[in-house]
Length: 299
Image 1 (cartoon, rainbow, N blue to C red):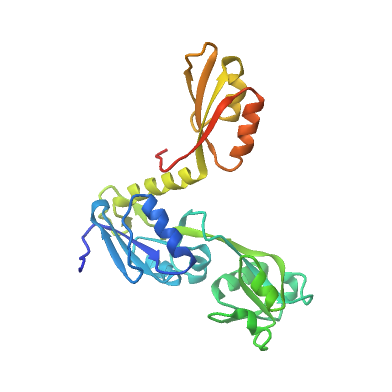
Image 2 (image 1 turned 180 degrees about the vertical axis):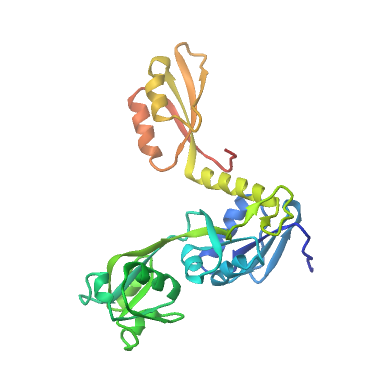
């Protein structure tokens, strides 16, 4: 079946493979958008929501968005900065997190000051070169497309700069991380630099009107992932203390119970630390404390 692009549709680039691909598609599904079932499919039109998806190499996404060929992209912050594309980060998505570090032979380096005059191998020349320039360090940078860990052993480089998740790959290669992280990366939503939403979506520098809905839905999913709904019962005289622990976003919902002197309280609370919060509420007299996941929301 062949799909034809419709005018005025929001055009979104999604990673076609790699660590960001599955998580990005899951996020979009949670936001109510159609996603491909066949991993070989390159485009998909969600006509109901006014969106067309393009499945591209993560490293190419920032370039397409920066040139204005596509309106929005989901890619890594590291890939965005490395590309040099005229695109801006809109919001971090909280998955695909990683750190960027320098590494050398175990015991050979202790600080980035020792990089002066050294040969650095990396797959992210743009990121590394920008970092060295900010720090005022003169060193040569060589691009390698993969397996940078072997470059020191082969005599191509003195130091490497690469993504670090657990560090096990570098340790296996006899390398040791040194210095502070070059950067922290995660999946991000990007738009071309200077793009603004217009009511009609017709301006050449504007984004289609469907962008506003997209951002609202995305924000709703991200908030829903970060919060849970907490319900509990408590005696009215302890309400003020308990409410201070569970202020919600705009204040908790408080309802009288059939049992005299008791009230029911409902509030959104951060999912992180929610178990400790339950303990604290119990200690001040709350009972029947429940946590419920939030699937979606609009704030």
